[in-house]
Image (cartoon, rainbow, N blue to C red):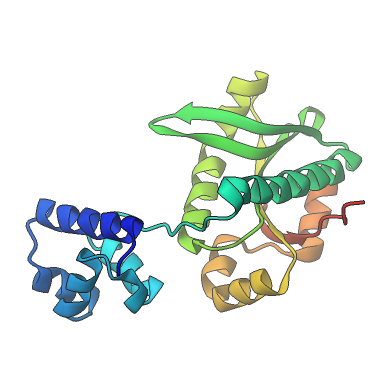
Length: 227
């Protein structure tokens, strides 16, 4: 029997499909699945299908399916936030040791885009800025690329709003928690990620010490064990 949340997901897909004036068979053709698969989703039988199929079905009606994991009455959010906060803190300390002025959770709202920068690194003497996006889990690759692209594009104006000066050099860096799963995902999407983040390893280290030119990098980072 379908759970309450699955039934709600199915109703949402049905509503979105109808809003687009699509029949089940029309949506099935767009996604490349059978009409019966669409029917199963809309009736709340998500457990009989792959997550990829469900996500693709929602994407076809301009929506995004995000699955939910429950654990200990919502404590899982605190668990993820803790890992993220620790990774942000440790990488912020790395930047500070390299003479960067570090600011975390810098909110912005520009040209209809709004959000927050995990770490904003500033080197006023070098008129340089660094936009850092921190990921403990690399899941939605395209979304991660798009988000950092937006922040990098708006970076100079964000620095003006935040600190009152315009950087001549703005770098962007995707920092990912070290781990075998994240390594596999990066390898699986290497072509896309290399195109978006061409700089790795020594090139990143050199830029952080002497920021000149553009940086668009991807770097793995670890967090120390808790005592």
